[in-house]
Image 1 (tube, rainbow, N blue to C red):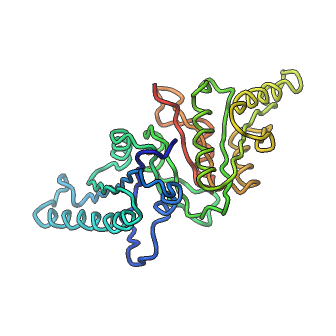
Image 2 (image 1 turned 60 degrees about the vertical axis):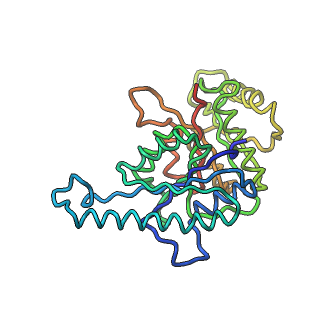
Image 3 (image 1 turned 135 degrees about the vertical axis):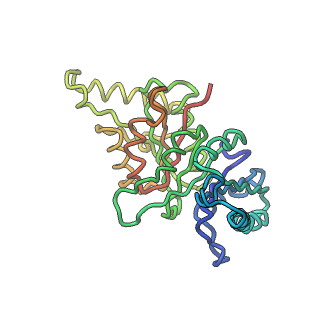
Amino acid sequence: MMFKRKVLVVLDVYNDFRDDPAHMPVELRKTLTLLGDNTQVSIYLVACGFEEYLHDSYSNFGPDAIEQRKTFISEMQGRLQFFADAIRAKGFAVECLVHWTYPRYEHIAKEAQELDVDLVVQHVNTQKFEEKHNLSHDTWQLVKTCVKPMLLIKNTEWLENPVILAAVDPVHSHHKPGGLDHKILDISLEISQKLDGSLQLVHAYSESARPFAEGGKIKEMHSQAIDSLVKDYSIDSSMVHLIDDKPANAILQCVDDLQASIVVLGALSRSRLSDAIIGNTADRVLDYIHSDLLIVKPIQS
């Protein structure tokens, strides 16, 4: 099970939701929906704040700034505590973690690993009317550096009986028994069951990328790889979408056609020299997917 021990939820403490007691940040609401009645899971609410003019290195830093920083941190703690109390009332164990740190993503990635959480939940601020969502630099860096599964939350609500779309690549060198694709499928199945949703798979093979191959051979090879991947899972062939296109295009097409609420996608670094690259497919679709996105990394050896 994925959600069996600890979940870390990153809250934006610059946005105060407390004026409306009936409202809870969408990232928290969706987290609680995923957990359901599994109150054995511990929830960590994390807030990272920083203001340059209140930092020790600022040229005009003095006693007044120290008091302002204490007030700022106290305000962050108050906002977290407000939601912690509400979640505790539902039976969960909750811990509030407030940090004065920069860059924020480094601390979150480190803390997620030290706490050994099962999932990191992060809200993504987007422009509603823009086709491209443009993830912030901080979110991009967190995706690249965090080794734990990450759920990037958008403002769109999940549909009733939502579609969970798993993007797999069983011909990739990182696919192996117990490897990335199996991890993607295990997580996707668990989420679809928890949300009473349906699981769909997408895989692209792009036959035109190998113009000298015998006609139909590329599709046949990928089809066999998919069959081998799903043979141990209760996945009907109607749930598998094998598309002749580039992976990014295939994923985006399926998201729109199926109205997927959550896309589960693998991400990996291409080389030690390029930790800024999380994978050719992932880095092409992250900014464009309107659904929530669960990013899974290869199992750590």
